[in-house]
Length: 316
Image (spheres, rainbow, N blue to C red):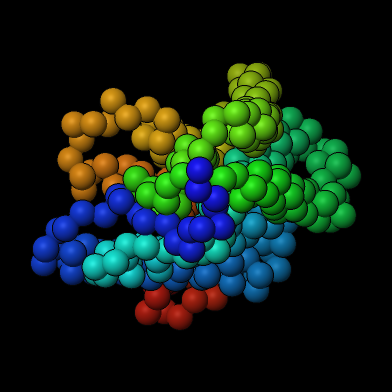
């Protein structure tokens, strides 16, 4: 039986020999990553600099954009290096760090979207009491919860994985995945705690936020059906980007879960498509959010026109 301390690295078996096409893929990834960094940093700066955007909804958006930078940075640089490299091994320390970053990113994304739905529920259903309920202190508290809870939960996940004795070091993905590392454990009895905590973590990180979002939208829909057309239009304009973001991220997480847990449905999928689907939630979401909110949210769009140089966002 081999001990995990005997492995100093993991092999990422998700990469395939794509010949000269790897340089084409590298260009695409580089452009995509630069676009993600640029779009998110621009909107973070706009929200921080424009005093009219210092409201709960936009502060939660700022938290979301910071998370997009955090999550994409955990994937893209390593992905681009391994794409053009002949060696696809990573140190155990880096692998566990990437697992930690991936898990905190996903959990923070759902938590952030959940808090944003709660904020919209208060703004639409209780407009007169909104400023009394959503005080600056409460906004700060909610943002702290969004960030600190996933970090604490992921530290426990990482600790439970590191303690395992592994009998292999090959991960069938282009990045380190906690579930696939746990599958390398020598004894299935050792992974019982991991499986139980994983289920508990899934409920708290995904199911509870989704229930909160569902509750908020049911209440919003109920109010909108009884309200004026103007109220419906306002609710629609603020909720549409949120719903699109939620559906896109949930779809990406579902694809990732399908690939990790079930091999047979993805067995006949081409390698390149298989890889794209496995990183979809970290490729599309970080770019979709800033573009969508920057275009759909009127106050952000107007602020961009006045703060950014004319060449970047021409005034109309």
